[in-house]
Amino acid sequence: MTATPSDAAAACPPVGRLAPSPTGVLHIGNARSLLLAWLSARSRGGKVLLRVEDLIPGQPEFVISLLRDLRYLGLDWDAPPDCEGVCQVADFVDMDGDLPPFILQSERHRAYNRVLGRLADAGLVYPCVCTRREIEAAVRAPHAEDHGAAYPGTCRGRFVNMKTAIAFEASRAQRAGRKPVGVAMRLRVPDDPLVFVDQLHGTVTVSLPEDCGDFVIQRKDGAFAYMLAVVVDDLAMGVTEVVRGDDLLDCTGQQLALYQAIARHGVQTDLAAVVDRPPPDWVHVPLVYGDEGRRLAKRDRSLHVQTLQEMGVPGSAVRRWLAGSLGLPDSDDPAELAAHFSWAAMPRGPAVFGAAELAGLCDVPRSAAPS
Ligand code: GLU
Image 1 (cartoon, rainbow, N blue to C red):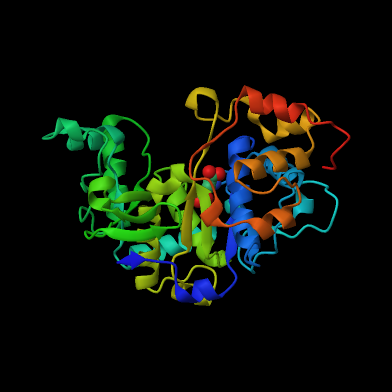
Image 2: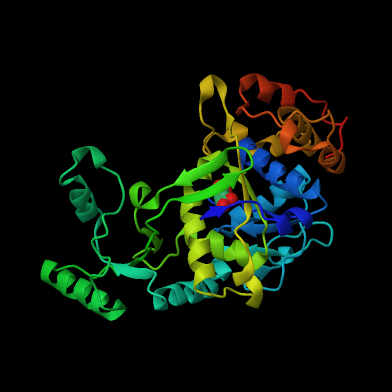
């Protein structure tokens, strides 16, 4: 089945989203992907929603720094629809202006659980007790070259229900003299190839049985996998366009399988109408690299948006650099950039932000430009 940008979606203004993870602070590469998501939606009169992807919660200081970074970059957002996980900015940080609410993944576990339960009822999800070592051994067995390849399906059809899987793990743990570690939940992937169209990468065909096999959507410790959360959230928020770094292109086939499973089995997430929604349009954008093609790492402090802010670089200067890297006019005004934005004109190669670019930004007269 092919997922292509739908006619309906083309006719309506898009609903885009900013979906940063508060696992560290934003770096310049994250900022560029977020700006692209913002420009793509705003350039067509669309909405932009904010979702903070703190699936494993517990670091509110990162949420605060994300909110500050977005304001510094001049990226605004709209109020989300009424669904679980809506949070007020003022509950985290005192910032100027009447800022719209945003979605926090750590507040949405009930929604994920509901979808997981329905998929399990429909027989599309099954419990898995395999350890990493068992999977590696099974995958390696006849074909050593396949190491790290797809899950071999050991637990597909192995247990009548969840209870028997839990009992199996409990007795195995007892025999080994350790505590039970719980069971994971895996989605049965379709046998046929999945096809989707990415705005920049064109038609992409994925064969999930060979790529990854049945994949985990809930871990043994009960944490929901990113794959499940992102699909459930985008459906609940009414997102019609996903713009993100091209390091996530490989995940999209799994997300499409989830969209199809949810749609086919009439699973409702938060809103009654979500089952009628097609998957979003996907655009996977080139990443930013450092000198010598080095991938930007979150630990490299000089590339953090927060560090630039602390060094006194105005947000407008960062926007201007980002705009230049996107082939846009020399402007720091988000609305003007949106007016000139088009995917067709965007440079396709990766952008470089190295020592020279950093020095250039730091040389910007501190008082000349408004932030
Ligand atoms: N939270 C992810 C990140 O910051 C993006 C996930 C997505 O856009 O689907 O890389």
